[in-house]
Length: 229
Image (tube, rainbow, N blue to C red):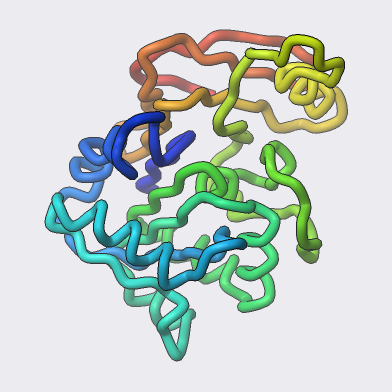
């Protein structure tokens, strides 16, 4: 499989998708047209989301068409040369894909070698479940089962920062709760980081060490370059 799973789309003070565009361009190679899945959008339109992504991709000569225009979303997936899933609300994304019966078609298509790019919610979707999303469950999907393209969970936007005077749990504490009752390890993916998987293996794209939490709370460290999970 060919996967590019990014923590975030945009770094503060930078244009949309600027930081990962080099990774995206190299990952797609000769593929210059992509099918975009905008269903993580909640308080802005799918048309607006498509336009935003298309504008960012155009500089690299990549054309974008959103699946919400298609009369047959399943046919669009079957003919796609690459699939991109944007960020937003992971629960809304999963619920919409379940209602349209698109989980299995996307999984099958990617397992057959079609490149898949996701950021934030789109990276959550590639995991076995969406249980390590940071999002509020503003809608209720049929279940939390996702594409199951990888054998671990991702927590995008991971940070160990806490708010002074705030008594709530840190992100790490929440993920340790997850690891106490779930089997899949969690890669704690900070901003400006990603994971690329292709025929050569799995590579961590990160300038800083990245935590991974296994069941029971064992924390190990991953470094930039080839990794095994």
